[in-house]
Amino acid sequence: MFSRLQYSGCASAGYYFHSDSYKKVVGVSKLRFGVIGINGIGKYHIRRVMEDERVELAALVDVNEESLRAVASELNVSGFLDYRDLLDADAVDAVSIATPHHLHAEIGLACLKAGVHIYLEKPFANRLSEVDAMLAEAAFRKLKICVGHQYRLHQSPQTMKYIIDSGELGRVMQVLWTWAEFRPESYYERDAWRRNWHTAGGGLLMNQASHDLDLICWMFGRPAAVSAEVMTQLHDMALDDAFSASIVFEDGALATLQMSINRPRAFSIRHVAGDRGILVMPDVRSLTGDERDLIRVGLYEDRLTTLNVKLPGPHMQPGIEWRTISDSGHRRLHEKLLRPARLWRKLGVLKQQKKTTGLPILLRSFVDAVLTDGEPLVSGTSARAAVELINGILLSAVRKKPVQFPVDAAEYDELFEELCTGASRIRGAR
Image (cartoon, rainbow, N blue to C red):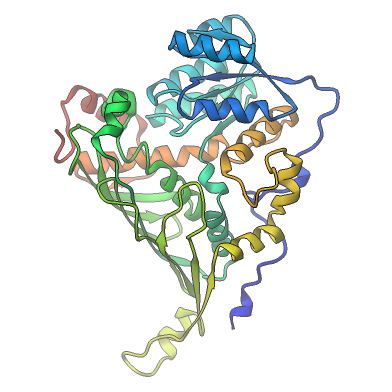
């Protein structure tokens, strides 16, 4: 019975890596690239950009003059203390933006207006209205936006989406998704801007959980409505460190989410139940790797719509045949569907290792999109959904009401200003 699920062939959806989308660009000079924000994740952007033979690292921007001077001198590139000076100098064709959250929209919109393509670290922006302003500007000027939701490129999410899209689970009806990490106060002492609504845009929701919320929208489509509770349970801040949400998707699937930064990373789960089968991840631990993750897929003896009227006993349960997909299974699936070894070597990001993280692949796809007028693996349009869901969850929790989609961006702007000034507060906020 399990033979219905064949891990071979090529999926029709556009989220898998296809080598033919990475064309050799002829007659185009190197892309002049700048990195705005060179500490934190920005230093990895610098490293990955320098590995791309199609790119010239042309400029760096950071407000820390000492750090900027040292790195710019070491790499022999121009350094700017203000991104506006970089744009005035007409020194770059594309940039990556790795700054505190509140600067994503300001810097991103200014770059787009200057004709510069942008790669944004997550979150796309703090507010849906900011996202829409950037998308409109990019569309008007025919520029590319890529957002750093690299979790889509990890093995487990790719395997999950392939199974869901294959139809083997049938029509998805229920989703149970939890996520947990621990963040001590020292995490916020190191980066004080993360404690503030104005600069961070939110706590757990906007920072850690945004990756999983992006995965959920990517896998299950557009939400139709959300009801949520958001709280500060442990930390000395006004921002959220825990939330629960109930989501109804446009196709009728019902999802329950529980996420927190108040307990150690262990035993997070993902369940996806359809009318033909169920997918279970019983202990999700992966952040940048998938070595200890496994997926169990159980296929029912028949569709539930049939069994619902066919089973004679009032308490009879459908028969299930199970198969477990471990890390080696993920890799075999990638070899068949994604051809990663050949493609990743072609992209210059595989140096005899068995696998790589999503960041270099995503950055390379952004460069390729700019040079070939294609689309990056996580486009701005695709990444919009996660911001809309985050804004919708906060609206529901603070206004104490179910929120229908599309989310009213103006209503959220009003709420966000109240959160920034303290006129509105989430439950338990310090």
